[in-house]
Length: 120
Figure 1 (spheres, rainbow, N blue to C red):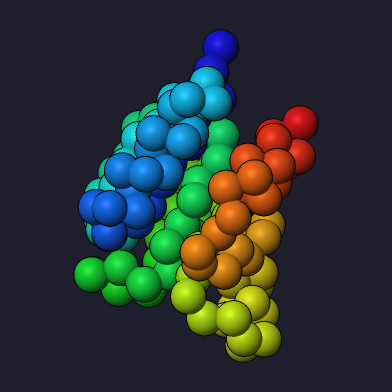
Figure 2 (cartoon, rainbow, N blue to C red):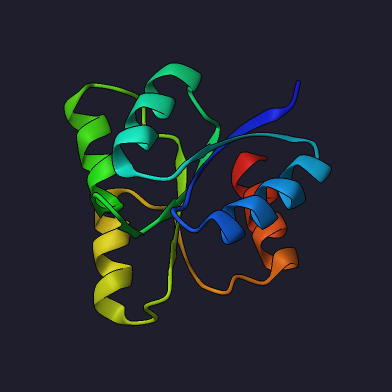
């Protein structure tokens, strides 16, 4: 059975490219472009891993984790994706429940390796 990935990314170009990459590596992918869509998708699909953009049109991506926890929903393995390579962003992400913080643009092989390791 394919592992389920919730890809939370507001850039259509990035989400399309990542979806193709992940699906070609046998992952089942659902894309959400906003925090609200991510909450709905996470609640219904129960992803194995979530790739979470930290900058979304309707707020901070980390609020998705906070809201899932407040709802009593399980929080999947979460990999934060951000353009900000700084200690504060990393600390906030880990404190919110992210397993890893990946700086965009994320190298394809590294992304696949990390997802594989976290789901093993």
